[in-house]
Length: 403
Picture 1: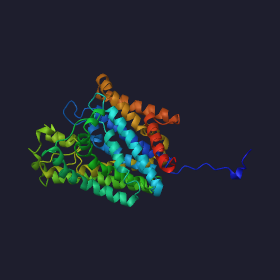
Picture 2 (picture 1 turned 30 degrees about the vertical axis):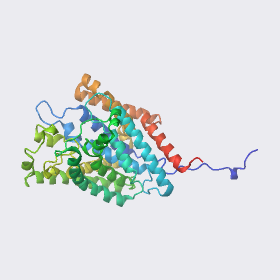
Picture 3 (picture 1 turned 90 degrees about the horizontal axis):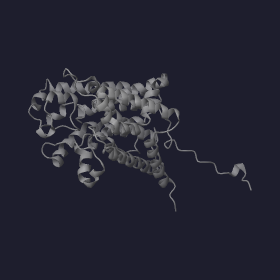
Picture 4 (picture 1 turned 90 degrees about the vertical axis):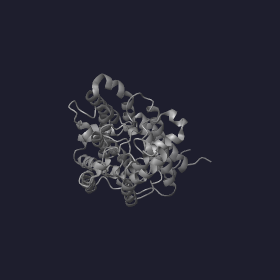
């Protein structure tokens, strides 16, 4: 017996935060972040003549910050875009974000077993996503205010907390999290939050700014232009202010002789130009004046957030005019979890065989080719598909609980 057409149940249309339309500019910006991180992992920071390599000059600190800001953008796009979810939808969105956080962290722990020299970021990202679940119900203005405040205040709070958990020097944690780290959960959590290379206590500012950006109508040209202009001001102003504080104000002189041996910094000028692992020493408050990559000071966080907004704004503008031009980057950027994990696992053997620059070119080319192939096939990367299934399952349990 057939059911009359007008009485047949209509399939429920998916909510827009369940299946967001992809923005090619966002994916392309994520592709830039992925290739930049690959470069800093594989290319030596110094050239043969002792100068800093252009890869470090361009990407060190900025690529990972761009990745973190775009993670926030992606979470906002997946949880309502300009209209954050409410009621049960908010609960479902939070459950989905927590499920995604679990997948990312689990992948990160496994990838952390790979031999090599890369400070794997995925477990930190998993915890960042878990923190983000608290904020997915907020609108643009609140997220922007929180994010901007966090970029400035977070490093100060971290400066107070680190001596309490890591000794008077605030010594960083260089260990890469892996499954064995779960045997010491307190030590693992301390490293992820405060003493690690990508401390969640300060990096949450990146995520909140990204979530605020994701609440904007990113398809509009005016919004993309505003992101580009605002980011340029931040990216230029922060290092200039840091240079003034270190130079004319005498900050650099204060830092001389203030590097504890436990930080493994033997050349202060080189360290200030290239890398400080996740934070700064706590021997003097003057350390907060630097804008060194990965130092997580207010100047570093504001400046790298600005560069992230510049890349995103530019990619959104190009994506509206000539979207096909961004296809290689967008393909890689649509499956960064899979490609980043593959990159980490293969970095050491390819680096040994091809050398730094050669290995980077190989990894970049592989990421572009694989990304394009998967995109043309209309599929997701395997790890992205796994995360999506976990997210859907968590949302379904909340929206359609079984009796």
